[in-house]
Length: 333
Image (tube, rainbow, N blue to C red; front, side):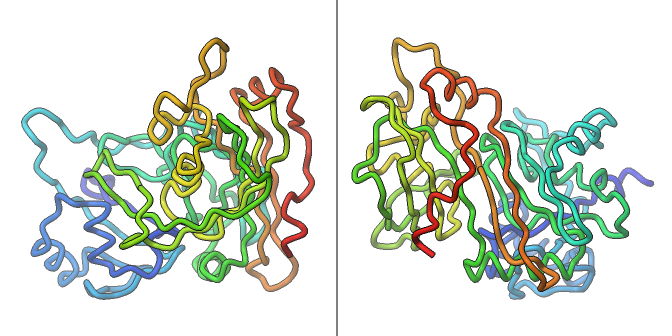
């Protein structure tokens, strides 16, 4: 393998990027890449979409694979771009141990907090770079079909073939997937069960991007929630069902109603921390479970992820039940 071969990346289109133009996808993920150069890469076949030549206006779909050739973007004088690196055997073994479901079409892993799903500026360690270690007996490299934030833990699905990725992507786009998150919030949402329907728009540049309520130009964002337990009026265990898949949707929505997620300084500021208590200062947001139609057309995929250590510690402190596995939104079916 040459140095250039090693620098080729094969990135999977996430649910949040589905249906945008290919050139728009590049502007989101590689804003330093000039449009004229992207056109040349496409024209010469160096950029591929699911192994085929593509055009700037092609619409990408969740689960599709984009071949990104070595871009050799000029580094700024004060910041050197990190070189791609292969994961160690220890990292591959660790991610294999986090597989919680596997069949011929699908793998579900329990993503640990702190692990990025895909690479970016300054990120050399990410799940996308470990996917070859999760082939097991499959001929194809598994593909990401949705994402979790770096600091969010829990269930993440991988498709084991292009066809499975396409069908899973359809389930996500058609909102046939039930993704239930658990969050510990500072403050108790009122009423105890409801819906947050608040459009969100993006602001800030690359590296400092965030979303904010924007009822004029924002994209539709809907979250159902239910308070499962509360500790006086200080903290609550809240179940969340994102009906849409906007970037940082749950974090922004809970901050907007005055109950930021514990440890989420980016959206909650100082209000996301409790003074006087020795609580872990990490984000308390966990993708607890997922259920959706199986890509084979027979039955369902269902997976449940145990709490990460820092949330287990907080649960123990406040007496929250970490073992509950009931569906908090069954009555909404």
